[in-house]
Length: 376
Image (cartoon, one colour):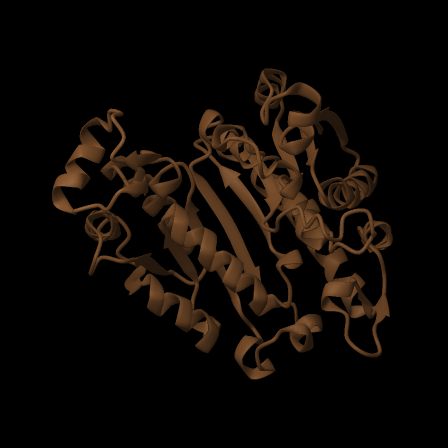
């Protein structure tokens, strides 16, 4: 099989973890007789430095031509002074929007070799295996937003005028971000979550804040409508604050969680600690077809960039998700996942999950060793 992969290494540790993932993909291609062509593209801070924009037109154009996108991480304090619409993170939001990737899958799986690396007790995290389905192109990240100054002779617009009438605002700066969802956006992410549950243990937990937010009340109503099409799947609802507690108290109760953009972003980072490190969690951003964008859920970690100490497993497992969802190569995806397990069972650890008695390895060496386990 020949496939074209758009590779965006990004900033900070992005190039390092992506390099390890590419080493594993190369080993997989060699072992199973495939050809993966990599097209190197710029996005994020690196693109701002070289092209003057977080997402150059060339990057978006070439990404559309590829079969999938593999992304490292973007951002860092170097670009904190950039205007809001020019920050590195805008590249990710724009890619998701322009490529119509409305669903983000974040599998949380407790590998038994890492039970002792989790900050939670072994009896709590052992066996944890669930999937967070996060809506990706709606919600507060894509709603109306802005910053104004009360008392200045500037126009606020109808929305801000309305807020001023509802609440007396003192002079000074005023910022707003709007959480908004349409029925269509909620229904399509709900249907995907239920489809995923059919392939797992047939349980969906929908996370919202329906006791406070109108957007969450619509979210809950639509999820109830979706459940009618899937009578074999159990649906429960949790407020987001309760969900955050339950993830720590008993992660084994979950199968599929479906969440809004903001809630999914926060809860999946919390869930990463169940597995021992945010460096362990991959993600897949999908749309209607097979095209997808694959990236670790962690950030660019500029504090450790260049030290060969970042954990590349999330990036490597993201590549496995690409093999599974975009390319339909199930055997190859499982081979990558098994190679990760073999690496860990052999006692190898990157610094973030290292414990006494284990062998500490760097980013590049981890990629090389995992690649060596492919097909064994």
